[in-house]
Image 1 (tube, rainbow, N blue to C red):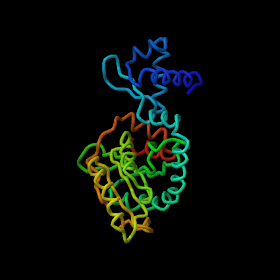
Image 2 (image 1 turned 30 degrees about the horizontal axis):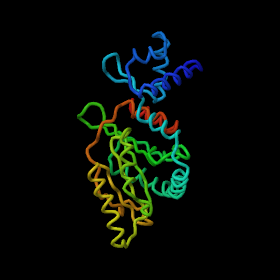
Image 3 (image 1 turned 135 degrees about the vertical axis):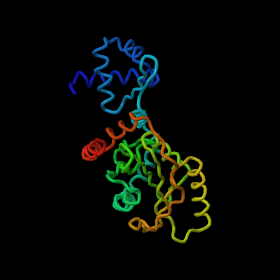
Length: 270
């Protein structure tokens, strides 16, 4: 992509944001004051980065993808004290990502029956100092091919990881927010006491109820059992797959997955 296209794409996104993040081609083109060739080159360049999506509608609808909106919100950031708390909690969670990753990559994926898959820790893509409504901690992308059904089933799963000590109702909505770019969403709670007190069961019960109400899968991992998939309790099964807008899915993969994972997904869907 040339520098001029990059500059034009950035300006187009800025004007689209000023217009509320959604409009049609004519209105956006008029706002920019560009001719068709320059406008469509910039629009397509912005779409190629996963920032802009297109849909049917009078004049052709142009919109900021949910991934882009989340990124713009992150740049604004949270209040300093809240951001510091979130960053401190993130530092405590990091060790669990590495402990859980092999189990998810092997036992979880095997249980799902994927014929091909990509698993990646995406938590590090969160903007430092941003609020909690950001990217999932781990993403699983899988493909299932059936013998007598044309095509294949493509699934993106988002996994939000929370230590039981810091678990609260907002964790459910944080996981739910990731559905903008995933078919199935899970909240995975680690460090749950092996001999929980009544207050522990009450705390988990409140979160379980919220997960059931909002179709968020809930997985509870007892303390020290990160590598033992058989000990994981699927307290709430994720609901039927939802279908996010394809541009939101594509935009998420473009912005938050590594180059290696993007190449693997590209080969998977060919």
